Amino acid sequence: MTDAGREATGRGAGTEAPIALFLPSLDGGGAERVVLRVANELAGRGVPVDLVLAEATGDYIHDVQPAVRVVDLESQRLLMALPGLVRYLRRVRPRALLASIAHTNVIAVLARALAGTDTRIVLREANTVSKIRAHAGRLRERAVAWAMPWAYPRADHIIAVSNGVATDLQEALGIGTDEVTTIYNPTDVVELRNRAEETVGHPWLEDGADGPPVLLGIGRLSEQKDFGTLLRAFREVRDHRPARLIILGKGPRREALADLARRLGVADAVSMPGFVDNPYAFIRRADLFVLSSAWEGMPNALIEAFVLGAPIVSTDCPSGPSEILEGGRWGRLVPVGDVEAMGQATRKALDEPVGSAEEAIEERTTDRFDIEDVGTQYLTLLTGTGTPTE
Image (cartoon, one colour):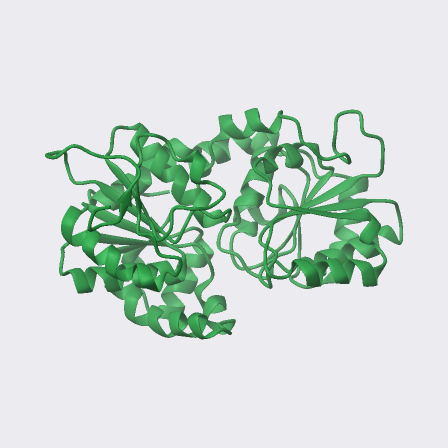
């Protein structure tokens, strides 16, 4: 083990300073998936990349490409990784450090201050900051909410994952417009389409399966994703026609959601398999993708459903869905928390699907979501060679 932590792979002396990307772990969340895609893309271009993890664990750990050097700070708690991150910055002196997720962003800024280095710090904000601060409940969440107005302005630049997030950042934290750049979350379109054709591994969606239409929700089982509204809307749908619902993801509200499904009398038609490695096969085969979130930044699952041409119903939450769906052109938008509106939109979508987004997929993925274009935008900001434009 080095001062910087346990390194899974080595890099020879004398090589150029790497670009570092910092995360708590590679657990199965949207931020982790996006940062890993960026890491793999940049490393694939020959850019030296260090993926610095508080703890080198998680669902995506086996998806790290060999060209990416993993630095394990061996800390089960993010705050305990601070000394290791300070040592890493002093020893390796990366050209830039990209952090994502609010508490990780705060730690990254604090680590540079303690390290006394000139490493360029770029923060990626994937959520609506005003909502993060308003819903801070636990002590750690309140501490992060308190520290954000100190930390974020001290970064060299901030990446917002949607225009809505960018506007909220500026209003909530007083960040200048020239200090924030919107870069949409990247998607590897070829990989998505290839993996969508793989075996789904669920009896309701297997090829040749006979049964009622299947609705699909994807996301962390948390307050933010508001799967309770989805379950109640699903019960409304079931009052009018047979249907089934699959919710992919894990999180603290799993038992509460299972109990709600039982109380609503729909448990026999609801499946919650947890985290799955290939949600794209589910998206391809489901009859409808439904996003019920109370707030977002730029929901990856919705982007992926759009790219795969799935029929969509989504809340018009801050931020992202309206930008992805162009104000409802490519899917139905409903108010946040409105069970009746979601139920009605879902029934209409099953009876009269909004046309597949095939006409717009190439244009939208190339301009906004394609991993090569997004990777170039990240590289430009991380190296400080300019400000990318959409």
